[in-house]
Length: 397
Image 1 (tube, rainbow, N blue to C red):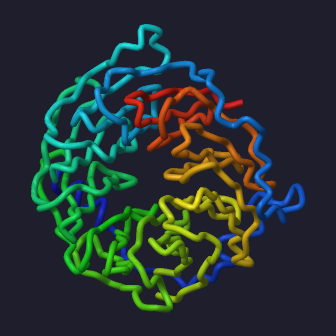
Image 2 (cartoon, rainbow, N blue to C red; image 1 turned 90 degrees about the horizontal axis):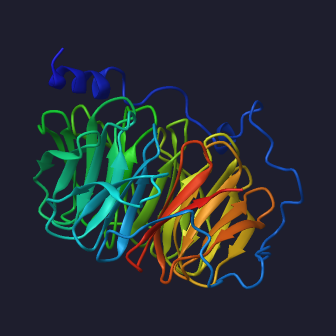
């Protein structure tokens, strides 16, 4: 089977929209692990240890190859290989555990800041998104460029991989999103319709749909059929987000989407029915990062206002507000436990218990703000990228 045939099989083997409409309760099936182990009403209770920004270095590995801020980090799903990208227009591959701290490969080719990185599901390819408008496809074993994907007329805002195949998706500042076959570099679709930068997006976990969020005056969530390139649903208007979208995540059931916006609002939407399930009010400044737990009934949002908010998906209420000294720019979830990891511009990474809202661990070492964070697939380590030109690995627990 050719690469093009395989790509078609991945994106077009089933209907795009299916099944009965889902309510929020569908996120909280009876067989899911209970979230409540302690009192969940912890609003404005940070539980954070005192003296949060210590001068000591908690990292077990420090990568110092970059000559500019490190804006993007990624951890391979199949190994201890990590990737970093930054303001020096370069991508590095590093092997966690290499005591020399030397890079496995330096990947050159971008002509502007590398702002997003993502490994494919097998860990064999890495996609990098640059402000130069190019998406790099890199062979992680060879440490070499496979393709430089071109087409967008503006900076690449984010990149994502299809969950079952080597198909890469990217959103651009030029109001478009693009779909390529990463094996052949062939453009499969160009998604047009947004009237602002495509600030966020991804495949649904089942791979059947593409979801994108428009920034600035666009302020819309759009759902696309990746086989035909057509927009099958648009959510927009004052009852949705009145300002541009900044972040989104899709629940594991592929029907519920969490979005965050510039005005600090968050929304839960059923993309099968187009029904707005609820607006989540709690932040006072732009939301920068959102995540939905795949197996437990909670979501998390991080904001420029310095707060991580843990939301109850059933009641759409605040479970906990976890306060930081400065903006929360990225959050990730532990792969199997109810833990949330945050990257903060105060230079400290933190771990929060989603059940109680307490800070269970924090890691110092960076001299400037942290811009990105990723967790290893075994849940034992996190990697952070910082304005201090370094990436650091910290041990969990």
